Image 1 (tube, rainbow, N blue to C red):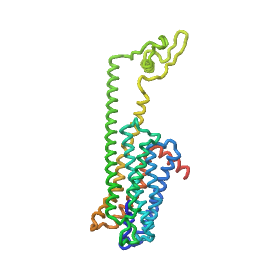
Image 2: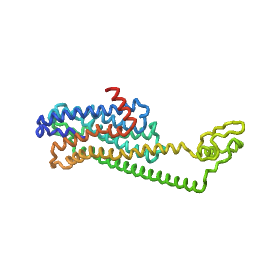
Image 3: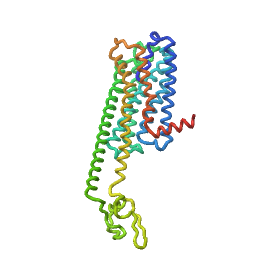
Image 4: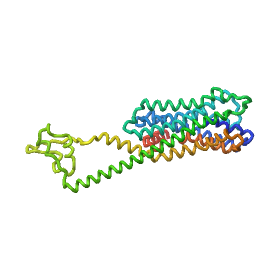
Amino acid sequence: MHSNLTVTSNYTELLPDSHYIFPALVFGILLIVVIICGNLLVCLSVWTEKALKTTTNYFIVSLAVADLLLAVLVLPLFVYSEFQGGVWTLNSVLCDALMTMDVMLCTASIFNLCAISVDRFIAVSIPLNYNRKHIDQRQIILLSTTWIFALAVASPVIFGINHVPDRDPTLCKLEDNNYIIYSSVCSFFIPCPIMLLLYCLMFQGLKKWEEARKTKLKNSMHASMKFQSGHSLPQCPPPAIERDPADVKLKELNCYSHPDCPFPKEYKDGHTQTIALPKLNCVQEPSKKKRAKINGRERKAMKVLPVVVGVFLFCWTPFFVVHITRALCESCDISPELMSIVTWLGYVNSALNPIIYTVFNTEFRNFFRKFLRSCC
């Protein structure tokens, strides 16, 4: 959220009235509670429910941890500063630590959103080689890179970039405009287009997949109708009991499961001996089932994409546009009210993330219902 306390830095003179401070305090406290409760539920559900221990959900837990730490380590001090009318009454070391955590955790939250888009893109591009049950080395590297990059973006603050001459100790903000531009580009203006591109590619891949599936289904129906027009009944081989077992092929056994087969599924001879034919298929059913399962799950993701991208852009774009504009144009007149709105809007995204990535998941919904019923 990069220098979000900058938003309140000028409130001492511009917005000192209690009519602003009290609503901001109430809203901030409620937002902290919602973020903590929502993200704790996400972590608890994946920890306790075996059905939720999937690769994609581990990425969602990483996102929840970033949002949870933001609500615990950053937002309370931000709300405290609002309550003080924008005046920083604590020491500058704590201010720099707060700015570092603020930049790192908000960047980690955005990077985790981007990592989820990468993970889902891989799941659509190479579904048969994608491990959904156990996290592999590729996914561990992706998760680790997310947090390492977030720390790298925030590290200049803790290493002293805020130590400028004539620093005002009553204000807690990012002091270097070049760093504001750098952090904004790294935290938003680079990962955002990447995430949008990956989701667009995933959407196109799922669309082509769906079209290919429909085309294959139409061809199968056409071939079936053509076969039935030329044959009144399927041609089955002689019953297996009348032949040498060594000459019976596995593909022939599947023919007896056809409802129109002239030979019964169970064959009785003159001594009323019964043989039940094994249910074997001529094709590789496991692979077809696996493809169908992945296809169905990823097709559901198409319905979530507009929500994911829309909420992400709605919450983060205004803040970073205003934020980088202030750094590039010091003479531009940006009202404190506008800065306050876009700042809180960015924080709201941390409360919406658990809703976006769990409300569309049946297992998450079932856990939430069960948990709330047991508590309430």
